[in-house]
Amino acid sequence: CELLERGVCCLPSLSCVLLWKSKMQKKARAAAVEPKPILGRPGNHLKMGVVGLPNVGKSTLFNILTKLSVPAENYPFCTIEPSEARVAVPDARYDFLVNHFKPASQVPAYLSVTDIAGLVRGASTGEGLGNAFLSHIRAVDGLFHVVRVFEDEDVTHVEGAVEPTRDLEIISEELRLKDVETVEKYYEKIEKDYKRMAKQDKAKKEELETISKALAWVRDERKEIRFGDWKAAEIEYLNELCLLTAKPVIFLVNLCEADFLKKRNKWLVKIKDWVEARNPGDLIIPFSASLESRLLEMSDEARKEYLAPHKTTSQINKIVKQGYAAIHLIYFFTSGEDEVKCWMIQAGTKAPQAAGTIHTDFLAGFICAEVMKFEDFKELGSESAVKAAGKYLQQGKNYTVCDGDIIFFKVNAGAGGIKGK
Image 1 (tube, rainbow, N blue to C red):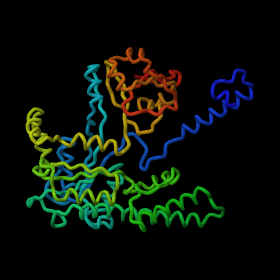
Image 2: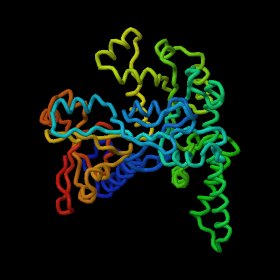
Image 3: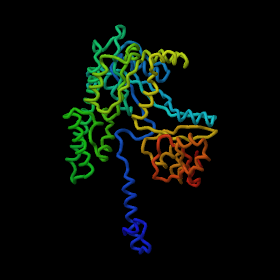
Image 4: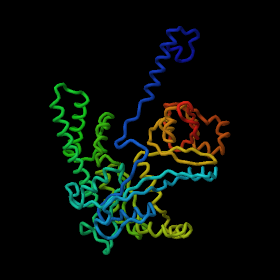
């Protein structure tokens, strides 16, 4: 009934009301379309790996990020086993909540970082312990690809001379070739299985078609999986293979200190052109590992004084925050005088699953999520003021948690849970 939909129907019939209700339900379902799956592992505890050729500054960067000592000598394969650590994610919102509540317990979000030994040309076929290192890359969810731009006669280059675009090509090609090998083997296996079936299986046929499409993309088109146009069902199949070129990449350009402070280097434009042509949309962050190492030893005041004349800042916070975002992680806050904590979840997580990160019983007993936006809390100054302004909202099971939400979960105690804030 058009009159009812416009709110001007005085005496709507029962059939009219039912028709209108059905139409509204269809609209609601259409608006609640599930987001497209993400390439990569699902989960809250994801990792970034630091990759690149030997002696480009990977382990130096890792030392800076984690303030831990791992081998960083001038030797191509000094890092045989991957080193892992957790790096706190800097966030002014978290700092504000800590200063506001002054809690007994403070738990920031963190980024897990893995230092992976240097790859070399031919790694996909086993050169330079390549197979072991490639398996370490398979175990992470995103990549910091460190490329060397600095010149230093005391630090040997495995290829003989500094040429960043060549180095970028080597690493990218080795990862692609390993994916070609993985996809080819899997395609041969499932093709045999499909041909042996007495009765054709629709799901197996869809998988075979997806893997065939992926093989054509990564082998024949010579492109990375993450830049393909994949349907939701195809992504589910691809995620089973943990392909290396499906992982998001951030390019970290390691300059000497002087070039970083001057913001000039002959290779920067060439690197930008290479990334835009090969990896459109990927982030490039110039930094100087040698400068960051020195800044790490300075006091906050000395660091500001040193950087002020150059109108620049340390890039470490940016590297950490962008790495966290690259693997599709966000977090919500629980806050109070006892504790301020960041709870890490994947982007797109619904409220019940977010509650389940606090305690598994919260998922089963979920009733609702009482949500404040951080910006509202900061502006108004208290929970009571947010409520008075009508901005303290109760959200149900279909609510998608947003980065920076402050949440109080109500759960059914009978399901084994308790109220959680």
